Image (tube, rainbow, N blue to C red; front, side, top):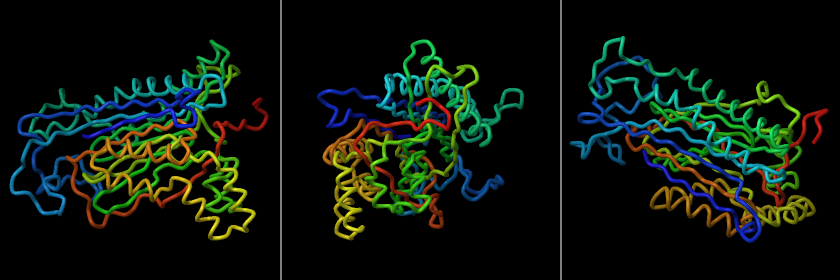
Length: 383
């Protein structure tokens, strides 16, 4: 598995700010004997979109033609990842993001280790039942992700109780195993899935933010959503004030799973990538006052970082590291309003992308604005 990370304080905060983003990735690469065996003629009862990196499709080259011989043994990988963006409107967003990434990474080690030990037949190894380890089920992995995020939420609340500092953070966390990415999130940090073979980009997460709700209700359009004045307001985050019980605090976690193929590139990013514009309020006013004219809409789209630009940048980069550098540069060129973190993952050992693979999600665009992230209090809660 290939991965690359990058994080930057952002151009606007470079002289007098701190980076409140935090990220962690843990990749376990496993090889044995001659590598993963070819089981292309076996029927294992899995659905069409399921695979564990063991079939002959992974021997195909980028044109889809089968290679005559393998140039090197194929390993298999288990990866966990966490990206958190501390809310800058509070005293300890950087601490909250640090607690989130370290806690969640630790909490996911058990399920990752279980995944690593499962399916020895992939390396042509036979183990008796008393020794073999069953792979974690999809439901168990999703539950582990949600439990890990809840544990991080409670640890941040415990910190606030001990220090009196209010601390909030967003989070996207996941586990890649067996040709699938299981992921969960809270807040407005994002996960995208790009595919080099189909040249596509898919937004895998849905922002927990005011602008998303306004757009869902039809009160604003996609262009206005990019630069809406309330683009910094999120409706869900980890952490809080000292008025919660750290042993019982809960947070609503969204989760999902997506199949992965050799050409898929997973991108996880804080909102500093698409929330880069420092003059977003002016652009919003201009767009609204022009009665949403095409010319004003184009000025907005030219100023912000769009999903299409992310797609073009990543798919034309020479490497994941180069793509990461290019995205940071792009965000800073557009204003660099906020901290920016990116995390890329790709597993070339997986089967190639099938021609009939459906898109997982429709593209979605999101807000950009020039203020610190603010968590909206629930009804009756003291802000």
